[in-house]
Image: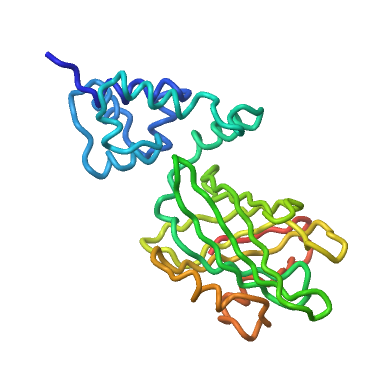
Length: 268
């Protein structure tokens, strides 16, 4: 009798992670049920198959490959090969990605709101997008900023990675033109059926005006999967608080209650 490639390949993929219990917690599948998949006694439902594929960063077709081909595929994806993988950073990124939970439902376009680090009293509305590629969740953000001394507008582009760790959405991005700044966002996930606002805090600083390290509240307003970037970008730029939705303006107010020792953001 020919062995089931699904159970063989799933067992092989599990060897790259600390334990079956860890995998079940991250995927959100009962361990007894998962053990039945490993033994080949039961096939995953369509829903669970999708969750398993998203977690391991493979397609269903790849998970059903002949085991030798699947092992070669996983080895190619995990062994050092590119410039990043050949550096000490490679193992760190792989480890973070292995422990990161699925973010598929958060993929799409957003308006990002926060008080500008360079222009006091103004709120930045930028266009951001999260996508998934080769098992990683990628982040892009574009800002249209006022130029110095009232000159032409400047466009700043950021790229980065997104991880779901510790029940929080973590975004690390880098300004791509000069590569002179890194911004980190930590956002609360949403537990409702749809995505409305994602609220959190970000650290960074202005690209000019002293470059002081700073932190601010940040709101991501979900726009959907199919968004025209040009039309969205046309609505971006520096705005006064009374030019945006009052609820968003309130959410991004950087206030600390009396007696507070740290800057914290409460969940919506």
